[in-house]
Length: 349
Image 1 (cartoon, rainbow, N blue to C red):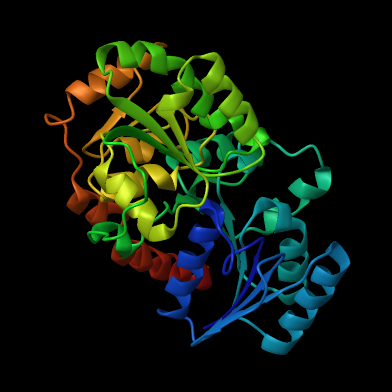
Image 2 (image 1 turned 90 degrees about the horizontal axis):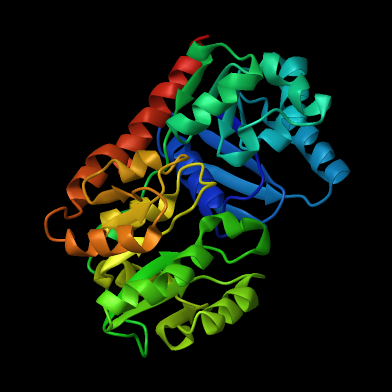
């Protein structure tokens, strides 16, 4: 089986969508596909056994490279890694008669795009997979794609989460809450500011606690200013350059992972925390409901985040995270088996 994949970013790039794409493509390359050719909008070039990524910036350059790759490779299956790339993928699939597999990640699929051109390619989709039940449901509400053609292919978690990391960050406080994620101004829905506002109340009950935020981005200055205004600047630690090994150490030793996000397609950071044995707290009003349903996951009760944090801290030993349950349901082995089965099913239609 020859596969051509059109994605935004995969290899040589950071982020949840990028991580999903890497696992998705490698599962095909290490499983049913004899060759996976990847065209990305960013991330540069990458090559491994049976897989090659080339990148092309700019709409017309990307279009030209995609058409050339289709002619050169003559694939059996076309993957579309993001809804924004569907018009091009549908055009190529229509011209070549290829089955088309569309991947849905989150907020981009929750409501109909303003552009009719974005919606034009939907009838060409053979299979659509969504990272969560929530994203699947929101997509079905507007897309017109039949229910049986939209399946859930959840995020997976890398095997290094199950190992005991040896690299501890420098100058880390003793007991701490943890959040992990980009601090971009257009992603304020992740709720770092809500945790900072809740800290004064939390610290009245847990005076030795700190709040560690691992991530960087354009919203860093606003969050630092907010911590100062709330009188908790000395208790909020911003770790903007944590390595992967340091990040795993942070997960493993945190009292609680807390991220009251309202815009997660899935939320791989919840899964990583649970795989490292750290209990997690989230809103569960979006795709995060799937990882939060695992042992160790807790939903914010009502609207009082401070009360929910304190309750989760007190219940930490009674509701421990279970890394093995994460591995069984969301581990790489389960993910790869599902990708292989879905690829075979798509080719047979």
